Image 1 (tube, rainbow, N blue to C red):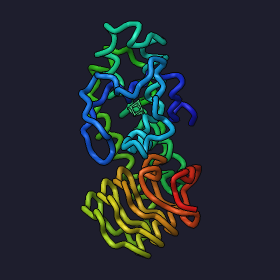
Image 2 (cartoon, rainbow, N blue to C red):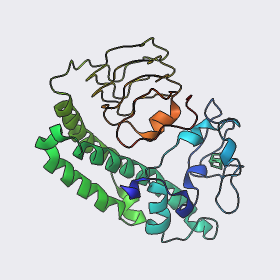
Image 3 (cartoon, rainbow, N blue to C red):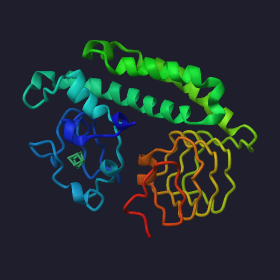
Image 4 (cartoon, rainbow, N blue to C red):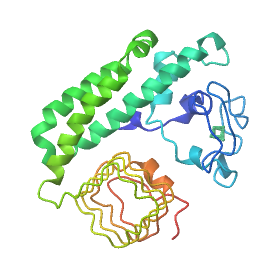
Length: 264
Ligand code: SF4
């Protein structure tokens, strides 16, 4: 769905201003919330866009707002940017934090609706999609008053049911939330596993079979996916792939792109 893809040209660089950064391997600097990144240009473009990873800003290279930025900029705030209307800035940044969560849910719900095995919950998924869509069109006041955590929880229950249906008949290894940072998972049979929220930072997944594995929210930063099979994996975001390493032999799910920094 196009509206769930970031369109930076229609945004006011909200992700470069609204969140705080902590200096780390992902961000070269500390930056308080609500303060523009020093690399941000007056026209809302990034001054180091072509060299983000080399300059220590790999967190920016993998960030995805799921289209929340342009929704806030063009719809919620009607195209008035925070530079020309600085009085709107605090509310715009707070709304962006809510909108990003709603757009992320829209992305997951859309993915779940594409799973034939989840047909028994398709009607509920569609209803949740419609409700969430409606929320994204709310006013700033309505968005700021929203119990977004409660809405996320309700949708997550549904997404888990969709995942269970899709993975029925598989081994269903449950490593949800597991700390697998740096784990040696070379050629591991992870078919049908739940890896929801698992920490797979720098895990060695070369040659692993992740068919129908649920990777919702798994942290794949620096994980090695060379020759791994993710073609049937569930809920894999482009951002997760962008944060990992892989090669020409990595099999990707659906319409995901092979990241340019992967080895060939
Ligand atoms: S480095 Fe560029 S993309 Fe990252 S926050 Fe700064 S301006 Fe935005």
